Image 1 (cartoon, rainbow, N blue to C red):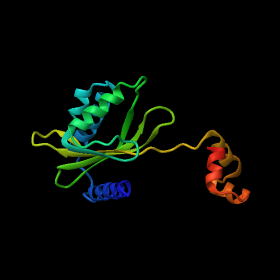
Image 2: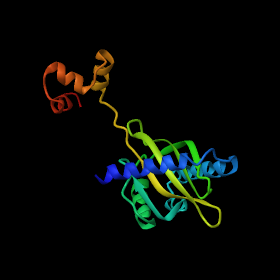
Image 3: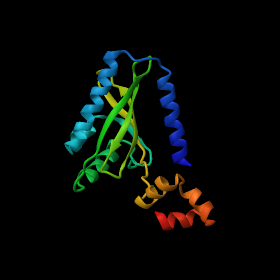
Image 4: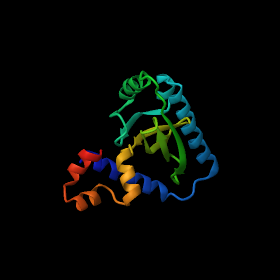
Length: 180
């Protein structure tokens, strides 16, 4: 239920930000540059550099995110992720939108952490008193890839698990166990 409410909350924020009208090019570029610099900080696996992009009140949301509220949680979780062998998180902003007030923005796009871990992301940014943009909500969702057998079945038959279950007259849970 909390995840559902979180998704609704983020969708409402995204819609509200989108309604702000087209962004001017300078603020848009500032947020896009901040997003790119943040991605480079994460790629460097430096906890200190990565934390520099978060607002002290930052939180996470989404199925692909570790739970965090505040810089201490972000510090601990990024340290764990950076310690993983072959850590390779990347993302690319495809859209940046800034509110009319110019104090809140969001960047959205796609992220990847290996061939089978990827999905959409949304970062909500707040402009600081010094003009710097910092992340207030860091959200990412994991897109589950169908197993190789399931992909082959879909390609050959054009139907998914529910269709296979109906044709075989077995439950979807059984199909999930059989095909992955």
